[in-house]
Structure formats: C-alpha cells, structure tokens
Image: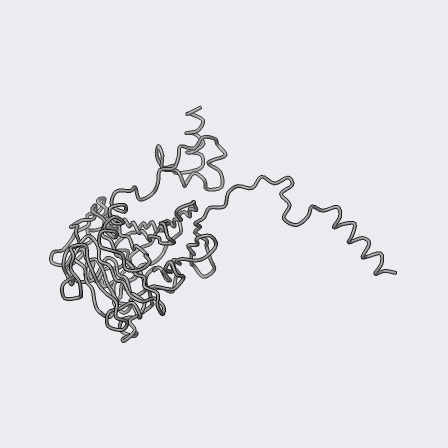
Amino acid sequence: MLRIVWAAGMAALVAACPSAGSSDGLQPKPIPRVQAVPLPYDQVSFQRDGREIARYHFGPGLIRPFVYPIIGPSGHGLTRMGHPGDPDTHSHHNSVWLSLSDVNGVDFWLDRGGGRIRHRRIEHLEDADDFALVVSEADWVDGNGDVVMRERRQTFAKLLPREEWMLVIDIRLDAADEAAVIEPSSFGPIGVRLAKPISVHYGGGRIRNSEGFEGETAVFRKPARWVDYSGQSATGIIEGLTLMDHPSNPRHPAPFHVREDGWMGAMLALHDPYTIQPGKPLRMRYAVYVHAGMPPLAHIDKAWRRFATEPLRPPFGPPKTARDCLHGGYRRYNMPRSFSSQQDCANFVKGAQ
C-alpha cells in the first residue's frame, strides 16, 4: 500500500515539473567558447568548447608558475615536464615557463638556484568567444625571502582557425627597493620544452626560424622574430609550436637558444646586462603559436604579424549600467580606462548618464 501511495505521489510531482531540458522561465546567456576555469590545487584550465587546451599552474610548492599541458589541434600534448635524457638537473624545464638565471646575483632559472617566483594572487579571470585570460601577480624572491622584483602577468589562450590557437604571455616586472640588474646569460626570460617525439634528436623533428635558417647550428643564438619547432606529436600526426618575440620587447629581435633535444627559448640579455630601475618596469610579450602540420614560413610569419599588431587585450567598455560593475565586473573594462573598484565603475556610469 505504501509503495502505491509513494509511486502515485512521484507521478504527480513529475507531472507538475517541467520536462528535462525545458527552458520555461529561463533566459540563458550564450556560453563563451573559451573559458579560464579555476581548479583545485592552484590551477586554471584553459578550455575550448569544454575541452582543455592548456593549464596554468601556480601552487605554493612550485619554484615558478608554468603552463602545462599545451594541447595541439589533434588533441595530443606538445610539451613535457623535464628533459627526456636528463630529468634531474633539468627539472626546471616546465613545459612553457618564464624565468631568468641571474638577477642581482640570484638564480631564478634552476630549481636549486635559490630564487623563486612566488605566486601572490589571481587578480582576474576572463572568458570570451575567442580567448580566455588569467591575470596574476607574483614576487620574485631570493633565498632569504626578500623581494627582488614584482610581477604582473597576463596569460591568454586565443583561438585561431583549424583548431589552432595561440598562448600569449604579457609580463611586467617592477624592481622592488633597488635596481634589478639582469646579468648576461643564455637563459630567460621564456623557455619551451617540447614533447619528446617532436624533438630533432629523439623524434626527427625540425627547427626553423623567421630568417629562413634551419637546424640547431644555424638557429642557435641568432636574432629572429620567431623560431618554430615541428615534429610528430603522435603516429602519423605532425604538429608544432612557434615561439614568438614581440616587436615591443627590448632588444627585439631576440636571439634564441635552441637545442636538438627539444627545447627553445628567447633571450633578453645574451651579451649585455639589462637594468630595471624602480618605477620604470620592464614589459615583455611572447606568444606560442600552436599549429597543425609544419606550416610554410610565410604562414608562420603571417601569424607573427597578427600577434605583433593586434592589441594584447581587446578593448572592453565602457560599462553602460551600474549592474555591469557588479560581481567583479568592473575588472574586465579597459575602455575608456580601467576601474579600481566597483564604486569607481559605478561612479563612471552615473557621470556618463
């Protein structure tokens, strides 16, 4: 008897409720194609149509933040953690990472160098139809925990045709209490460790640069707008990554450090030191073009020109209603200016009406 009453009650409840998937009473907003999704353990996943294409790691136990994995158009990973032949002494090869080997005598490059890039906070996350964004802040500290430089970083995943995409990193470094001197070195500020099958030595890949040179010997330490590393990401599938130096970077075009074992990096202070004075920050922009096949040099150059000329962050704004300023919304606007708080944003809207 109880079963009959229970079943009858459930039937009445189902009849009274809208059917599954019904949009009665809802006014859903479009879901952005690209999203920066925060995850447990201090990570942000960049997702295209719900599938991960990269992940930003910034946990307190790390020596430095990094991006891993980098997923190619075929769905396979194109980078790795560590050197395939020397994982211990090259443990600092963290897929795609930013670092420097000598700032005021402090080594931030090696895991055992004493320096550390200590994440401070995620300032902003942004989702859109063609890109997602993470804005973060960090301190570059020495072995005593003293701050040498302060960092503000914008990390983008920007969609391109054919399931290709571009990882864009914009970084601002401010000297802390005294000048920060970046001493001459072959390492930094950016490095890319390729997946083992893509490398020349382990997988038979190819290294090319914007000046038309090919191979480690011809490309090593030579100035270029970009360097491309292409090879086999899976059986029968050719993909690759192009590391790009932005024309606004100091000393552009950068000399590139490349190796047949599967890594490449753009250098800032190969021969001469670079000094960051307090109040005069260093700004740098780099991109990693994630592509299918092994594109012709002209195709890669076209992608570089797009990176070189487009505004890093598309203009957003101005806010039109006070509601636009709610729930952290004020952080997304940079037109006609950025807003320091929700009230600042609301005051602008009120004054514009």
